Amino acid sequence: MTNRPEPPSFVVRAIATGLFTGYAPVAPGTVGSFFALCFFLIPGFGRPEILGGSALVALALGIYTSGRLCNGGDKDPSIVVIDEIAGMWIAMLFLPATLPVLCGSFLLFRLFDIIKPFPARSLERLPGGWGIMLDDVAAGIYANIVLQIIVQAVR
Image (cartoon, rainbow, N blue to C red; front, side):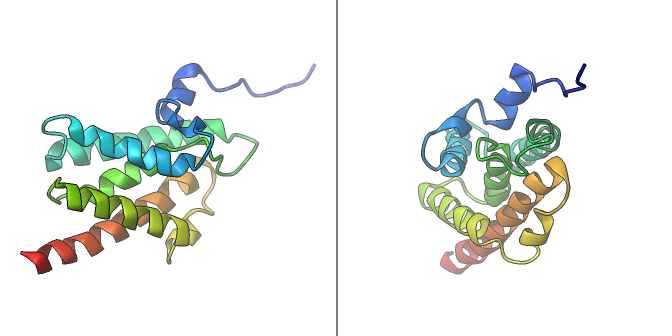
């Protein structure tokens, strides 16, 4: 009799994979990031209290669900995109949800998520869902700071 962990539930997989957008055959992280932007089509989603609350919920759920999905296997499976969703929402926090800013946040977030400047690379070494989520939180913060500077400079 083997003591294998129970496979993640449908709900855990749905959350961790961004409603299954993480199963995109090409660039699932980019697809997940774009999926996060689609929420800005919902009226009022960009309001700081809604967006910030959503980012916190995504972070908390992501720590749990991504940790369950990688349990005993791949440290950061490519199908997990809840980290990109939380990171994109952080990148847009306290910024106007205009098309140029949304495009800029997408490009900058993806750039910072790929190059992982300090301390993002160290954060991804944290165990389980913590490492999966926190490097993308850092990428979102970096993108947000750069965009805040650009938006203020353009005003």
